[in-house]
Length: 412
Length: 203
Image 1 (cartoon, rainbow over the protein chains, first blue to last red):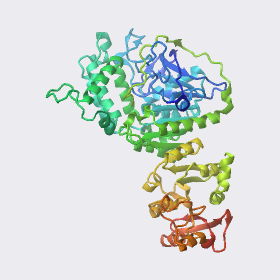
Image 2 (image 1 turned 180 degrees about the vertical axis):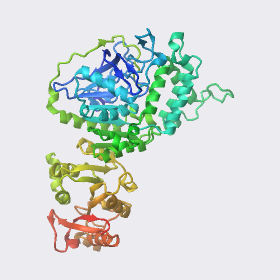
Image 3 (image 1 turned 90 degrees about the vertical axis):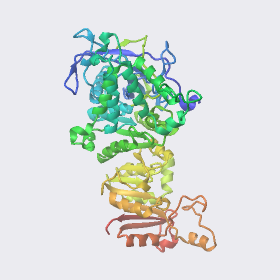
C-alpha cells in the first residue's frame, strides 16, 4: 500500500472531555442536568467554518475514529482506513470530529459515571437513550465548537442512523448525510438478536439490576454471550466459512463441550477481550437505541413523511452480503428520499464480508466515498484556504485510557 | 461542466435533442446513466431534478464525482421501487440495444414516466445494410463493436421500433433522426445513424 493511494495516518491524537453544563431532555422524558462528551478532532477548521465533518459511531466504537495515541501507538482509530490525510475523508481538507456518545463507556457520561445527585454510579438510573438524544447532544457539542453547519455527518450502521437523524432534526445544520450499512428500522429478527444479548446480560448473577459497580463485580459472562451473538450477525456465513471452515483446534474432535472448532476459539477470544473493556449497561442502552430507532413511527409508518424535513444531500451505501441491515433497508431510505425529491446517491457494494464490510477497506466502497467528499470539498472551495481561530474547548485527556480503536466485528 | 464534457455532449446530438424536449423544472429518471453527463446537462440547462440508474461500479463513482444523483441498480430487474407516473420523463439513451429484457424495460419506463425518451443506433442505415450484404456484421461510429465483443443484444431499425410502438399501443409524440449531428428528414431509416423518440403509454 502506498501513501499516494491510501493516504496517511492522522497521527498522534489527544481526546478532550467537554463538560456541557446545560440540561439534556431525553425522548423518554428523563433529563440530565449536565453531562460530559469526549471527542477528538483531525484536520483544521477553515475560516468560514464550513468544512466540519462529524463521524458518528456504532455499537461499541468511540470518539477514537482516526490516528493513534502517542502513549499507545497500537490503538488505532476504528475508521482509520477511511479518515486521515489523503484518505477518502481527507483531513487535509476537512475538520473531522469523532464523538463518544452518551451512555457509552469511553469517557462520555454513561451508566458507569458518577451521578452527582447520589455520588454513586448512575447504573440502572441512567436514562434510556435514543438516536435522537445522541443527535441533540452532538448538536450541543457543535455549538460549543462554533460549528453552525456541518459539511457532512457520516456514520455506519447505528452511526448511519444518527446521520439520517441529523438531517431531519437539524435540516439547516447539515449539508450532506452519509449513511453506510444503515437501516430505517430494525426487523423483528434484529430485535430478537438484541434481546438474546440483553437477556444474557441481565440474567448474569453479577448484573445486580444494573448496579453491579457498587458490588465490585461485572456481568462478564452475560456480556461475553452478548458479544458472541452480536459478532455472528456482523459477519456473513460465507465470510465465516472461508475464514474458519470446520477447522479443528486439535487433530481430532474431542468428544467434549470445550473448544473443538476454530470458530469457537475465535468467538471466545473476541468476547473475553470485549468483556474486559466494555460496560454491560452500555451494551443494553445501545442495543435499545437500535431497537427504538424508527423515524417513521411518528409519521404513521410513512418513512417518506419522516424524512420530508431533510434538506441535506445524501449518500447511502449498502453491502450485498450484509444480512443484518440488508441492501433492501438502504433502498427503503433511498426510496423515501426520492419520494421527497431529495438529492441522493446510492451505492450497493458487492462485498462478501457481511455487515462488517463498512469498516473494511474495499476499493469500490472507498472510491465512492472519496468521490462524494471530493465533490463536497469542491463546493467548499477556497473557503478552505485559511484556518479559523479555534480554541478547542474541554480538558485534554492525555492519558487517554481505554478508547477502543480498530478491531474486528465492530459493527452495529 | 468541464470543457471535455461539453465536447462529449456536442458529439451526441441525441442528448441535445433530449435537452431541448425536457421541460424546465421537470423530474427525470435516466436509465443506464453512465457518468451522469446528460443529467448534469439537464440540471444546468433545464433546472431538471434528475436521478440516474446505473449498475457499473465505475460509472456510479463517476456520477458521484460529477455531483449527479445516481442509484446503483440493475434496470433489467425492473423499476419496482418506483411508483407509477412518478417522473415527468424516463430516459433510455443509447442503451436500448444493450438491454436484455427490452420489451419489459420499455413498458416499465412508460409506467414510471409520464413520458419516455428512447434513443438507439439505427441498424437500418445503409452502411449497416451494405456491410451485411457484403457478408460482415456492421461496424460504424454508432455501432463501434465487433460481433464478438459487442454489448448489444437487441439491435433494431427505426421501422422495427415504429412497429414495436404500434403493436404495444405506444404513442410516438416526437421523433428525430440524426446523421453526423444533423437532423435527417428524407429516408431516415436508410440514412439516419441515431434515432430519438419521445413516447407515451396507452397511445
